[in-house]
Image (cartoon, rainbow, N blue to C red):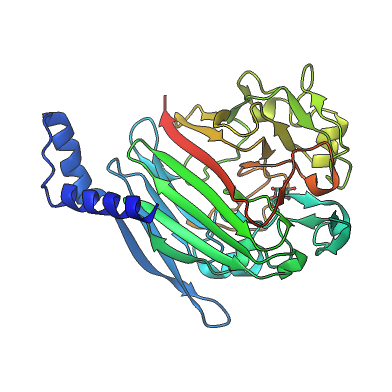
Length: 385
Ligand code: BGC
């Protein structure tokens, strides 16, 4: 693994120093552009109240697409992607400075763990032993607890061309979860405008895990308006109904004939305010859609914003995708570019396991034992049309 990485680094070095010969002129030209643009830069992103300095890393590909990430929460702070005229604009919500992320962020751009989404009453049992987690959301456990992976410092290193490797050692019983957990997340920005994220973890004691990425997308660019005109396809026949505290009932429900049917591209706003018990419980879409082929890479979602022409396709090895349409944004946050994030100004497409899996024996397992390697991959691909 490490040897392969070194070979990749040496090869990247050779390309940059011009030693790798290419035949096609076209390729030569694009590489020339790559020489001047592809790079990872670093700058300070401020200091936490405890006095720890936060660094922002920016990856830029040869088309000018760029991704900025900080070592606090592994947060994606900026993602500049072209519209159909080639204008680069930011398609993720977030804050201008660190203080917003530290004070009270609804998980903007963060790595979420150990468990993405909710666990009923913050309790689960493993091998006959009951564990209690923080009840930080209506008496339920949400997104890893009070100090989840969104609020910890990640060690960040460059891991080859336009790739960052983030690692974190989560201690046994941190936030109530058993086992010392070694976590690695890589963010890779390719020259064909993909953000490839891979998640790996190992434990020394049986535990549970469900990692995800919590970027809020708004493809209008710099969040010009809400996301209700975004057209969404979810490649899924079933979703996971929830109770009024957003815990799965245990049933998997056919989407046919309901506002949850996104098998053909539909504007998010078209049905979000329909009278429907599930939409009522979520205050809109805040549900998990079940994907086919649980472990292999598959197309999970397509999103399109007609004015900018920007499109986003999501592929994942995960068995489900949580689509949350920013129902809890209420105008109380002013984000980047001085934009007030009003109701439904961003949407999340979180690839993951079903919520509350540790308490639902018919859901795919989220247990991880010593000797096993947790490994999942998600690709966000950006394009225009
Ligand atoms: C959840 C929402 C929650 C939001 C937090 C989403 O992943 O599904 O219920 O409010 O995260 O910002």
